[in-house]
Image (cartoon, rainbow, N blue to C red):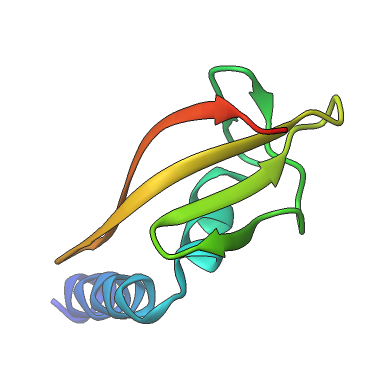
Length: 85
């Protein structure tokens, strides 16, 4: 019983942390170093908000990309990335 309670409590902490994270922090936490976006691996520390509703980041090959986002109840929803100038 106590193991189940500990797991449920830990899961609740992660959700509130994601809801309080900035869009850039959330995107990096979700995508950098552990997963790939369709065009490559997100370079850690490269994610920044360039305008309201839009992030910019670099992939491991040095290319710059931008992605629009929208806040939702669970954190953020990210849309398709586009190559940035």
